[in-house]
Length: 247
Image (cartoon, rainbow, N blue to C red; front, side, top):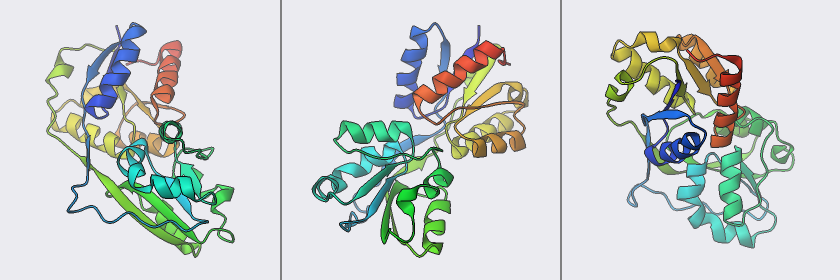
């Protein structure tokens, strides 16, 4: 039986594992990344939002850790446009009463193509995000002449990972890598443990950009989901099973 290796933070992986178990799918939870709020002493004051600003939430974690401080302004100022980079992020915003728009392509490139970010109409953009990450979005908007504020409200942590649970599984396996950072960390861990044969397994990634990274890192079977959400992953997993691409 195929084993699906879930690599997102513990709570996210546990939620997805329950859903997959209901479908009769075996899972191993191997969280290679953890998320934590920035300590109060390191968290900058939340940005003010102009009446006609655009507020971009990079991830569901950006909503989880950053929305509370911005919510009064987002609900009071009707001219503010809120953008969610992915479907899960938009869902989290909707649960808090915020109607967000989303790009056709759930990544920075997709956001940059949105009409809502036309440089002739947008004066201020606030990006709610975690520490680090890609700078493409902010850099490109600044090159367009837009005033950009990046507000980090959480950080990614890279805990020590015990790969022992993998030893108890047998092929075929399918790995989850919901971001380029997670993919890189997972690949480093497997290579460091001399588990290079696992690169012959299938890995499901959230975008074409991350798919290209996976190929460069040596993964032999790469499947691109529609986005990084649980729904996107499960749809991609069905594709893997239908096509017999487990390895």
